[in-house]
Image (cartoon, rainbow, N blue to C red):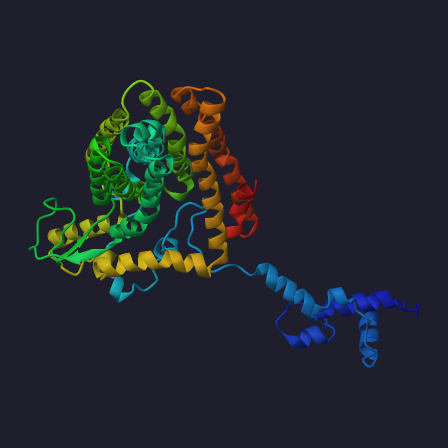
Length: 480
């Protein structure tokens, strides 16, 4: 009979630790040596290790404190803890609803919810009424129009800075008061989205009878009217154009300041609502490039504004700065009116429901938005309250807002600092001073061009995290 190998103390400790860390749900299997399956063979060393571990229960086995099972469980739980369920697209730009995230059963065996049996939805991305079924050229044309509209708004904010000297001369005002025209415009840009953004999602009752499809795309026979994105674009840009006229013909600084604030408020729709239109038209894997173009346009405007304004105000009266912007805004308004359709999915689904009710005679067909009962006042009030809730109750949101405020504050400080430095100290002309902002423009373009690299890095992080996105994955470019 051959002599059985006696296991060392290290082997016994390792075997005991393996038993304790076993992840099977049965606690009995974790606390006792594994029973060999029927027909399975057991090696002498394994049997001896199990016997030695069971023979010395009174003497606790010394285990490394840093490798205790409860500690490892806590670490594993901490590492696997995810943030609240997020419906953000893998590109990190667009927020998708829960219905879009929910997978549709394909085996045909799932029971249909009776309440959703007649709920109207898309027949895939090829549905003719679905904005994602448009050809690529039409989609990009809409993106370019909305991007240039946002560019026009932010360019108007900075172009005003080249009129300071003439305003001081004509109205006898100080530089500080003249600068208020810029500050109030930016304030309007910040306050406007809280009112204009939610209007695309609200409804109000109307006293109109049912109309045929096509007679009024925004009114249903159920007595509710939904705004959507297109009316917000049209009316906000109309008001933006109208309030440029008082700026051009103003006879005192008071008129200029009031008109500038309302102008910024009206133009802010293209800094908030337009991003939704881009997300409406493109699938998630196609969204990066168009969203990059759109998000870059508002940040390029403040650099181009002083260049245009400097070239105008050096040779003609300051009012021509606003005449040029009025002509530009009128062209943009025409492009929006004729070439930018409604893309908001809930509103388009309501139009599809109207068509189905007319064709089938079945009034049970309903779009999801027709079941909603959001009032304008309540929606706008909640839209005004929620930003402050996030600002004061979410530390990450507060930090990101502070970061954005610092960056934009530094950018707009340049509008006052560059003329003092380059005109007073270096003798630059007004047009040459405007060209000094070209360096910031080049840096902005370089930053935008780096977006595909950061998106690739972001996608890699998501893949390593099991396909789940986390907010912290967007921090590296911000830190750099």
